[in-house]
Length: 373
Ligand SMILES: O=C(O)C(=O)C[C@]1(C(=O)O)C=C[C@@H](O)C=C1
Image 1 (cartoon, rainbow, N blue to C red):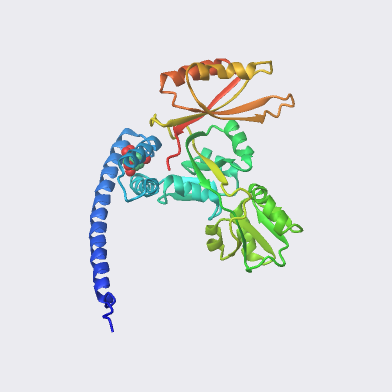
Image 2: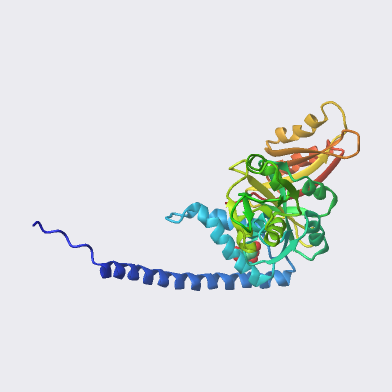
């Protein structure tokens, strides 16, 4: 009989694994020492800021740190892993300088909470609110340093309430972030039988319209204040189902009866980070910025065209143009505009000045670093 090779001995494999793990342990200790060195430096920065009376959170600096590291990353770590890792590191460092209180549409488990954690990292003080209005109120009153509000969904369009509140409150935008929104049907029992109502935020009900029409055509769609609130209700009543995140499922002990039921598989929601101008200055230019404004023009032929001419003239790109009725009953509109660039750049400043002169109403909503992934 021919000699059959012996299988590789298990202990030898274990030794290799052990040796690699020992190296990982050693690297982790080095990393921890370096992270603590970084944290001490951030604390020293914090002391200077305290003396100067200046704010701790610098979104433009954090964006530059992440952009800079992405540019030099040589792998094998994926470049898209850089932003989430350093956001957490900076979140922990920032927390040593001062607590960051962040208001968002709660309760725990909402996409707004995920957006807040994605933008600020997890070393924050969470301030869940019952409605978008309350997020604005809480941030305006100073019970939170920042608010996170949804502004736009790739399936459903604008979140009208947020846009209206940008207009009427003193808050301004200092950042943006966006999330893939995966909606799941959640329930106490693992099945579709006997569902009396599906509870979710109206936006989520709309984003799952096709699935609901196909699978639960006779079932009531019950709008509630947030998806997590729907999950909470479903956890208390087996006849109710909810549409919410996987995180909400684990938070409220529910089954994912049907995963990813949103009509658009690429469903994304964009969130704005807002703050009060008395407590936070406009972020400085990061080199990769967006400026948001809301304007209106007198109702005459060519007025909208004329208002936009300076953008073309000074080579400023417009990345968003949204209209909302002014509710004057006169068919007048507010236009929500995003442009690329920062008012510290002379061509942007000049374009904004001339655009402002062409408007009946002009409000700068904020200027901030574009979302870095
Ligand atoms: O550079 C600063 O101003 C810091 O406070 C340090 C640091 C960081 O950890 O890198 C932390 C918080 C700021 O938002 C920006 C950056």
